[in-house]
Image (cartoon, rainbow, N blue to C red; front, top):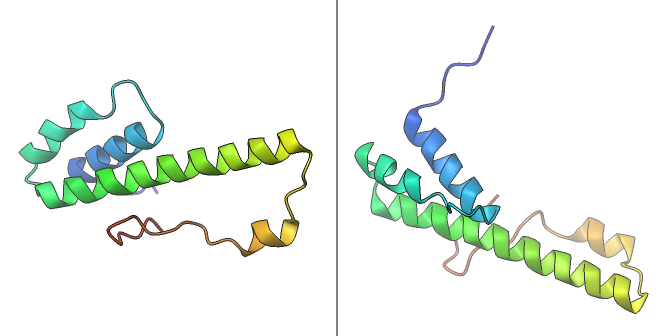
Length: 97
C-alpha cells in the first residue's frame, strides 16, 4: 500500500527549504510563485526560508569547527557530541526540529 500523495504546497515548501539549505544554485526561487499560487501565506514562506537558512548556516559552522579541530590535532570529545541538541532555534525563535 502506497502512502497518499503529498499536497503540492507541501512538496513546494520542502523543495524550497532543501534548495536553500543545500546552497542549490537555483535557490528554490521557482517555488515562490508556486507557493503563492497555492495560497501559502508570505509568513509561512518566510518561516521556511528562515529555518532553511538557519540549518544551512548551522551545518557550515559545525563543518568549520570540525575542520578547525582536525587541523589543530584536537579531538572532539564524544560526550560533547552526544550531548548536543539535534538543532537550535532560529534567531526569531522558529524551531527547526
